[in-house]
Image (spheres, helix red, strand yellow):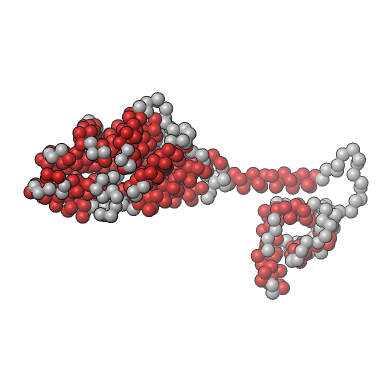
Length: 455
């Protein structure tokens, strides 16, 4: 039984009433005393038949008072019974002050060597516990590499695969946070958790799940707020803005972009991304002047400033020229500027042809549909068919929500204007319907305000 020994160690005198000396004799720190006290409480509970005593614990502050020799009254029940059981001495003796056999010198307090040793032992024990609540830095290095790899491979990885891998990494980051109390390690892990949640938000959107995408983007924003990380908060708010105009709330989108632009530490890439999102939001509102100003602003972000998320990690967090141009082409379509959309979408495809090793099926598909829609708006059905033909070969995993909604917009274009009765237009329209029916992400449906706009 823990604490059953009530004899004296040879050559060591224990004064009645000094619980601290008894603890010191056993070499107990607070943590060790606490475990012995809890065991004694369970044994007292069995002996007395009182189950409520079994869960009694002792706080460190209480332990310090009990071993100080300055207790004036006995503690509340059942503490006296537990102490008696633990030390085999009445609590009145254990907690009473020691006899003042030698008065302390007036010039300096008496120093108890035992107290010094116990204090040093407690300090070492506390430091050891703190050191144990940490992770090897190499472990955190690995998850940073994994999240970076997920972000950089995102454009060439199917959204479902990205989501599943992101879920694994998010759970890993959260588990690691529970295993360390070092501020710098926790800051690094919060950043990885937030970045992973942001990537999962993108994947959820691509898979056609808007509500989970919004929740994950907000999660990323909250992680960024915890560590005051401007780029992560800006990216997450930009994602929320993007999701807002997809949900038919372009005014909210404009507001969220303005919030995102106020966070500190943003580089040029963040500026380009937020400007392109703002342009789309203004276009959804029908504000052509504001949309065109935002497109120009995106092209003027060239100060050379970088940040550790949009630039250093890049990938899905980045905004390369082709991606920014693709978004601008869609903005021109929303403004019914067919020449601007055709020129910009063609530029996107030219940029991608120049870098075949960086193939991005989703981006290429969206640009191709935007080009086809621009040509339909100009009455060039043959040119539209030539532009969209490669899109039909994409497998279901790449038929994301953004691509499907563009195809829905193309289908609507084919049923309006002078092409509505053309046989080729009907045939192309049927192929578009077959394509969307086999999509990995379903369209938002005819009730969506974006069904005719292509998002």
